[in-house]
Image 1 (cartoon, rainbow, N blue to C red):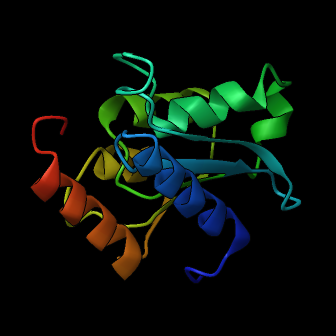
Image 2: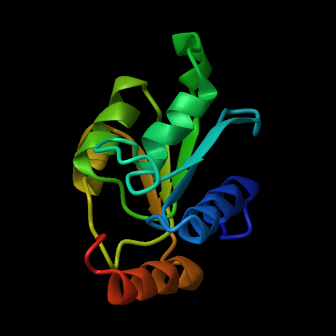
Image 3: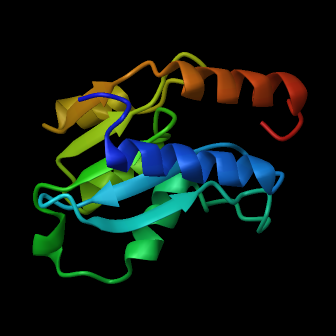
Length: 143
């Protein structure tokens, strides 16, 4: 697993797009076991004034209503450690693998995922770390 993986790169591009829109730079991408993108999204709490539209939720929403079997073997790529709400969504849909860009700026519910049998891979990707670090420094009021 490397940061050049297409699913991870899609999540990073979503995070950058969110930042360009004035939002929080967190992106996500959901890929099935065959490597096909099911959905992708970015955190839109700022852009849409939403309390719940985190990147992982946006990616699931973009995927639309799918048969439960679709999620078997799926991977959720996210640029930042997922919060408890997003962890719960991954567990609810039976997503078996979560790839995290970084958890230095925020550590979410990774342990809960692991305790429930989900494979968690943390890349500590330099680009993701710097993207969030700069955002938190420059826009602390939004964080």
